[in-house]
Figure 1: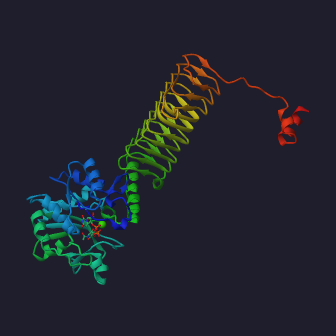
Figure 2 (figure 1 turned 45 degrees about the vertical axis):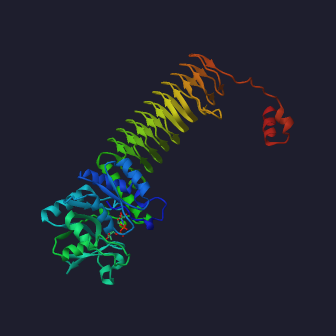
Figure 3 (figure 1 turned 90 degrees about the vertical axis):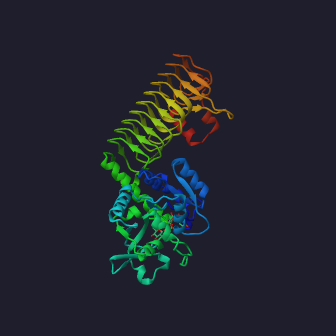
Length: 464
Ligand code: UD1
Ligand code: CA
């Protein structure tokens, strides 16, 4: 796989092949495809931003050999050095580009199969594009017999009119490629050693090279700039959405629904508009997500419902409901049939089966027992300015509205707390905790202190 280019057109501090589509870097898509073909070896050629790319490659695909390209530029040099790394290997070599991420196993297998059946020394994939701009053009004699490839920057006006382009994907007999590459020069518009030149050279020396046209341009679309990145990401997403629809998922608005390739969805899941599912998110059978919900690495149980929510590294078990307007931070676990309601933020919070935090609360570093109910507007004060502490709420406890639980503190099983309480001391099971200071009403205060105000007027009309 060739991935040593600079990627200048991306104008980015991130190496081109590490830009993500559908949740994984472009090069990750290509490596996954390459490894799933089970070749005897996968080698990746790197140079620019080598360290960053290598870290990703070896972390995710440890059985990959990294080859470093020297200062001689061009895809031909990259291929040559990859070949060196294969030693005296003399079978068929598949060449892929790190910036052609959607190419599928099926198209590659077809290419390899035809290559072997035709007994070719070289085979490549071509495609006819409405707008061939930027790609190498396929040269044929009288529109038929393959003659070679000319790069855009080296093409004559007449050659630029050609709409059949080189996809940058090839199979070569290793020996034939090795010897052709020794004949490739650098006398061209970019001063590079072009891999594409071997096609003409091999044909001229009587070897058999065929170009296999494929019909779906997206499979071979190359990414050189952010516009192409956006286009490809959109198209891949459309295909992922469609595949899930065909697998039994209802997706109301495909264009506003984004699903990473790494996400898993059960049957009869419903995704409402503007839902984005990322990373290792898994959604159980019959669950409904959205609208306006973004989940990353969230596990959603069967028949759970999550609306207008942002969630990260959380678990929502079967039948539970979340939202609208909830924020699930890492370490949240909502038990089966539990509820996290409107305007609730949770973090490191284990909320038991059937327990409810229905309204306007912050639940941080807490364990809430089965069937407990947390009153509206409750804050779990977990931070003393230096350390974080936990709060435990026992099963079937009922806490009043507007409580502050000053951690570390525990509220026993079945205990109650009164509205407006600040709970600083543990509450025994079954107790009622209340600590409001006695309320004092100062009669006539408004008429005395705010004479002539609308309040005073309203008050005097009632008292008269
Ligand atoms: C290349 C092809 C072009 C084809 C297009 C398809 C050549 C000369 N041209 O053009 O015919 O239509 O792909 O997408 O091959 N790379 C290296 N080392 C280098 C230069 C590039 O490894 O010295 C890698 C790049 O990282 C990239 C791939 O090779 O993954 C293609 O290079 P790029 O510069 O993008 O070539 P294109 O101009 O797109
Ligand atoms: Ca390219």
